[in-house]
Image (cartoon, rainbow, N blue to C red; front, side, top):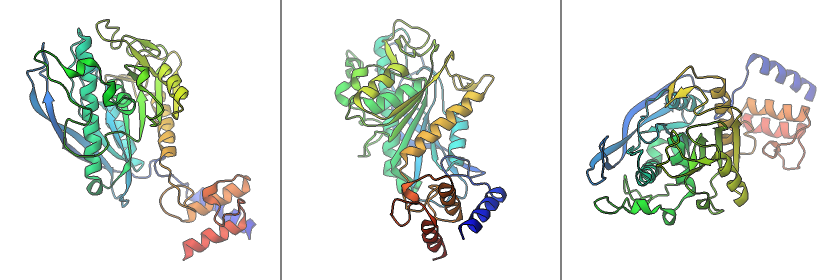
Amino acid sequence: MLKRLIILVFLYQFLFPQNIRYLDEVFDEVVKTEDVIYGNAPDLPFIFLFEWNTVDLDLDMDIYEPLGDTLVNRPAIIFMHAGAFFSGHNEVDDLVNLSIDSAKRGYVSFNINYRLGLNILSSYSGERAVYRGMQDASAAIRYIREFHEELRVDPDKIFVWGSSAGSFIGLHLAYSEDDDRPESTYGGGNDPDLGCIDCEGNNFSHSGKPSGVVSCWGAIGDLGWIDSEDNIPSIMFHGNLDPIVPFNSGFPFTIDIALPIVYGSNLIHDRLNEVGIQNELYVGDGELHEYWGSLNGNWFGGPNDNYLQIKNEAYDFLYNQLNLYQNGDINYDNSINVLDVILLVNLIISNQFDIIADMNFDNILNILDVVVIISLIVD
């Protein structure tokens, strides 16, 4: 019986190559909903000297979903663009591509606009700009958790993925708390106190922390903010010759000595290891900033081969955070079918063990497990 099944399996694999949701593109088309408002917050004019002259701004995002998807509890990724807190928006090439690519894999993508407002001659302004970005990302997460049923999103699986300034936001949001606030965020003179991390944008009472972080060429303001209680997994990508955001430590954004020193991915990786937080670092050897082929998010001779490599590593990492454990659902597509039988037989043939494929819980994979999984499908 096993020999016949093996022949059928190989024939099926040849005729119907399989894709795995969240790792591969399993949807052909994506639906985009534009300009969804997730909050409102005081924004600065493009040119400013002081921060009292603000105007309320609607914070918006574009939502990308797989067309025809029937799942009701899908993981989400929030994308945050580059631009040094001085420029940028959610229509830049790289993150639009990622939003579409992610939706085709089964995620719901939320590509957000966040407040800018950086005076490059002011360390004070730089810290406040990062903090406002954190508040806006927190507001987006809290919005998604508030309306997760309508959005058909799993509120416990909301990840953030940032490029450059967007990575600053993701890393700071994951690993800093209200008691880590820089003194500058309390304001002074005519500049307002920015309030707590979850105190801006909207009033939804949910955690604003992400479930995980994908950081592309990002940094953090203080390694001491990272401690063992901040148990949020991260994957980081960074060129070791990056002149814009330091791989180790230094001044960010064109070596501007008026801004505070920050700590890049290499040192964040060391600190996360020190406190026991799951993380991965991929180093672009000899690479500069935005080394997947973009300039401030816009394709500049890209996307290149690095873009494909970064995507694949990031999706693998996120997939491992989903914890999609249903006995028999070996390919984690939320259904038990012939594809799972194929994978089970492959495991048996290659003498590998996977607990999720052990249908009769005897710690052995053999024909008995195949019988059980087929009976589930037939029933």
